[in-house]
Image 1 (cartoon, one colour):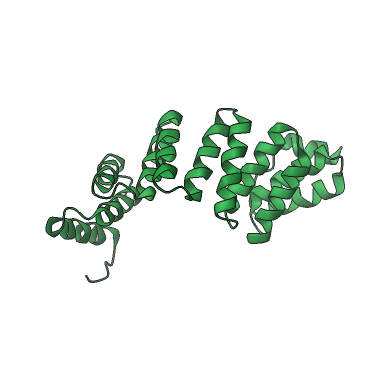
Image 2 (tube, helix red, strand yellow):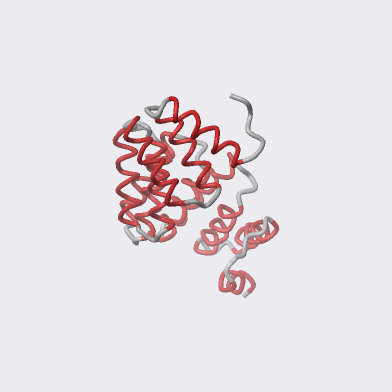
Length: 204
């Protein structure tokens, strides 16, 4: 198959491939991702559902369906699809990361920590999961563990702004304004909008 020069051509190629081999879960999945790129969410959803019909163990498709639920504000649906993703692929870190995120949105901090720890065990380079884990520890009132999680994120990606922002908050809670100021400054340099109340507290 020739390389597509744009997204519409790529979509046409995937549809053509499916007309010859409608049972290919991967092709349905690739079509779904391309349709997401076009913000054609209803068709993308149909493509991901077809992908699962053809390949029930395609964990990525479950995660994409969870993402579509999240886009529509359906946290329960998002949680359900991601739970199904880790059921079909038990070591799927992205699924656990999303499960942790949803629990955190609902204020279920313990559940969030449990899922996020699993996400980082299965993928020790999962920057987003470490950072979300640090947020969960801050919500739990444990700045030491929050610092530890952020440092693991920054080890992988030193310029990850959210990790610097969370470190600023954690160091504030540890009454270390010098380090808090340092990380708040770095977060802002990286384009992150540090909350004004955090800045006020650092500067006071």
